[in-house]
Image 1: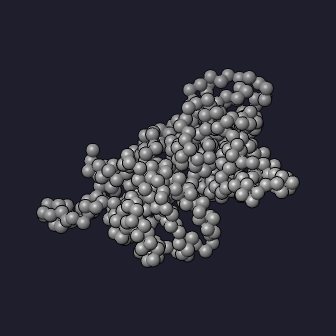
Image 2: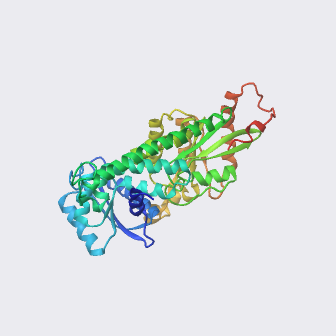
Image 3: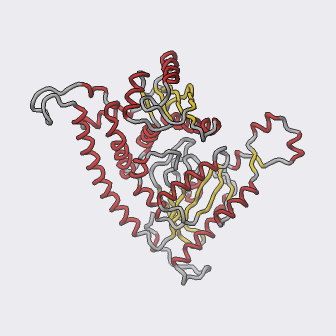
Length: 421
């Protein structure tokens, strides 16, 4: 194991004892405190997925981050006092920090400092399973770390002595580390190009069969739905980014074969390097004939999550593809009560209940997408048959574009698709 690999392994390994964290977020003028609270809930979920317990949250109304420390002087002192008194292990910021901000914050707080991108990269690092995903995450991580070496390596202040050191006497070890990482980035890009070529060859073999991609915000139930449709056993957890690797399975409904893929979930402020390095995996989405957009309808911010996914799809060039909306987790919402029922409920009951007018929601999104959405609870199999019927109907539309000469009731040889997976 090389020197820089050992450093990174040590950096990203999580201790078996659960660490504690405080969260920090700014509230700009155009953002409400409720929205900030929702964002911090998501950040706390990310921290939990990594293995850290959130013990406190700090917010500050500030139009733009402080150049040196992200937060104002008074707020930094408040955070520092809390961290010191309660012996907190890490401070996590809901936005990305510059290298200088990270260095300054660690110098002041004397604990580990995470920003949103580093937190997500760490989670992806632990969850990647395939060679492609591991290479992609490694590349994203190195690209992220390169400008931040001054904070990542505590030994970098030491000088290398001797005149034989490359670059002359007294060269800082950081320069050597930078060269090492640049070399690794070059090697990883070359490795990824080879993997991509294999993927292109594999995808060519899938021509002539409809391809469906499950997309959506992270933790909305895509993997659970994938398991139902394909009768497989893909990891499905109540954690963010339970799925990092794209998984493809073949399905046959009524003699109509199609491929369905479960892809990595999207999230607010997904690190740019991660999006760029996952282009090959996201080709499953770009090359799909039909997108199945899974939504956690029980989440209070589900409409914002839909917007995030749609925006990301547009940026990928997949925003115009046919899309079936699946509103999942209806078991966690309650239908809108009548006025008479509302009169007999207390304010607390009304406040705590997750009411939703599903009929109104259905009509609204059917008009927007042109395809009537499906409401289901994948974890319980509720309305699974309805989902299959709608999915088959949409798959057929794509299938007969490929094979217009086949009649809808014709049975034909499926052996050509037996090896597709």
